[in-house]
Each structure stands twice: as structure tokens, then as C-alpha cells.
Picture 1 (spheres, one colour):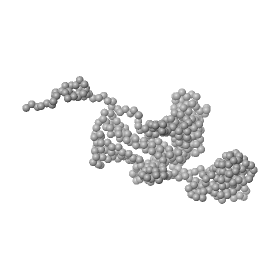
Picture 2 (tube, helix red, strand yellow; picture 1 turned 120 degrees about the vertical axis):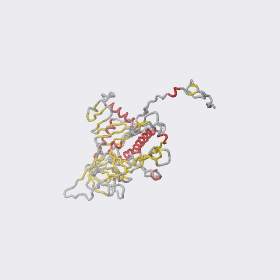
Picture 3 (cartoon, helix red, strand yellow; picture 1 turned 180 degrees about the horizontal axis):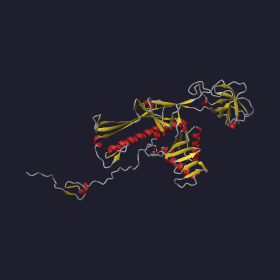
Length: 471
């Protein structure tokens, strides 16, 4: 008995490259496609984190959830005081009221009761208005002081009666006089922050992990292969590390009972930008372009508050553009190339016209574009200008590049990454897998899950030396 063939068989090749009931696809379709074997990274490397905290800081383990440090305060005193009617002539003793911001308790803080000023009988002060000098002759109350001028009072009433700036120049005494009964208490500031847990997870099926793709890819370590799972793992790790850096920048603490930390148990670490906004120096441009005078302002702040001789100045793209224009305008020989010039005929302001460094008043700023501020999917998002887009591309921050010794004589970097660790168990960055694929059999599901967790926080030392520039 003959074998019955399928209906329409034998088939003939089709003139078009389409399979029908009476023909088969052309032999041309059996030719391997000519595919470029390298995946084109049209956005460049998407590992955009710049290891900011690792480059400029140290990594120090901590066993608890919180960490703190103390910083000394100025040992000199100044403030403001007011008087209802300013004395305009003569040498009459006059009583002034010291502003509440300059009243302290016996521990040198403003947290307790019985706040009082630090002026003592015999102290000599100088007012900013008219450079008026006066001596303390009496202390009627914790917030008042009686003064007698060395030269006739010269205030112009009533405009100069409020918020009179002063500083304590020192003390004088008469022969056979006695030293003061009161002593000044040194003040310290306590800074505290906490760790936070950051995590993420990605999942791939077993079939996907065993399937070859047309293009060669690589993971975060540079390992190459022909499976999509390899690229996914690389993107997953790179994205996680970048997001850890972002959270270390932007997050701020909230003590409100309605905040997520109180209602949902989400504990956050105070980010670097928040730290500088609260405790550092801020230069608000208010929409104006950055210019050379702004460099001078930053240099003066660094000098006044014990900053370093060198700063890493990380800036967004728009801020970098105005900096470059300002430097170019200052240099008569600017032609867009990499050469050197001097501001105001002074080597003190030598700059590289590649816009990598500026030296002003002895303080050097190494300018670097900070990619996270510009990324169109992150801090550089510009989706709805009408309702207000992010303006991080107009921001910048300056980090001291030197190290200061702490109380134990140990040099401390400007920023320290604190991470959870105890008895050899480190939670700086943990990675583990689960599933039932390729040697990992912890569940019954045909998938491979990759998990990441980082338990970190950030500590800024001497935040007053750091500077934040906002657009």
C-alpha cells in the first residue's frame, strides 16, 4: 500500500519570500542575517555614578544604626544687640539687649534653660556701626548688658538702634584689679546621622538564561557573553550603585510623625546636599550666571571657615557652561583651546582654559562636570518645563580635598561612608541569588533571582567648609 503524501506536496519554491500551502520559503531565508555582533551603546556607558563618596572619603564600618561626631565651635564671641533709643552723644552708660541667637546655657548650648550671653564686666567690644568701642560696666540680666563708650556715643538714632553687630575684642583691668568671676565655656556641636537600607531585585527565567542572543554583551565586571541575562545583571548592578549615590546626595531626614520614617518604618540617612544646605555654605545664584566674583566669594568662605587650599567643584552642565564663559571672558587670549592665562595680570589666578582648574585668593577649584546632575532620566529630567523642571544642571558643590585630623590625630576625609559591619559580617554591598536554575536550587520556581542590599549612611565632617551652589 503506497504512503499517502500531504495535500499539495511536493511544493515548489515561492517567487515571494512567503510560505503558502503550495510552496516553501525561498532559500534566501536560510541565509544567516548579517548582524553586527557588538551591542551599540548609543547613550555611552550607563554606569554614570562617579564613586563620589569613595573618591573623596573613607569607608568606615559601624555596629549601630546611628553614628555621630562632635565639632568644636569658634572660641571667640560676637553677636548682635539692640537698644530702644540709640545714644547719639556723651559718655552715659547705656543698656543694650543681646539677641536671643547669642544666648547659651552653662553647657554652651541653646537646648537647656537659663540662657545667657557671654559678656562679662570689663570686656571690650567694638560695634560695626561707626567702629564704636565700649566697655561692659554691668550685667543687669542674662540678656542685657550696660556699656560705656571710650569715645562719645555716635549712633544715628533710630536707624542704627537694632541688630547692632559687635565682637568681643578682649579685656582690660585697672591696677590691683581682680580677674573676672565668670569664665567662658567652650561650645561644641554634635552631628548625628543614621544608616539606611537600600535594596533591589531582578528575575530571569531559566529558559532566558539558556538562550543565545545575536549580540555579544557584558556585565558590570567586564565579563562578556551571548546571553541577555549577562547584560541584565550588569545593568542591574550599575543601576543599583548609581541609585545608592543619588540617595546619598538628595535624601533628607524628617522628624514629623506623618513622615514615612515614622508611619512606614522607612529610615533614611541625611544626604550630602541636605547636610551642606543645613550646616555648610550656600551660594544662591538666583538665576544669574556664575562669574569670577562668585569664585572669589567661595574662596573667601573657604578662607574664613578653615577650608582647604584645594576643592573638588562638581557642577551641572548649565553651571559649567556659565563658568566656562566667565573664564573665557576674563582671559584676553581665550580662543577655545587649551592654554594658560592670568586674571588681572596675577599668577594668583592662573587657570587652565580647558576649564579644569581655577585658583583664586590662594584657593584652587578643580572643576568637574557631574554627570548625575545632567542625566535626562535622572536629576537632569526636563519633561514639563511649564510646571517646573529639575534645575540640578545649574547646581554645584565644592568638597575640600585635604584631610583634617580628628581629636585622636587621625586624618579624616571630608566625607565618610559608614556601613553596617560586625564580627566580619559586612553589609556594605551584599549580593545573593535564589531560584531553581543552573545550580541554584533554593525554590521550586524556574527562575533565577538576583538580590542586592547596601546598608550605608554618609557622614560629612566640618560641613561649614563645604559649599553648595544653587541656580
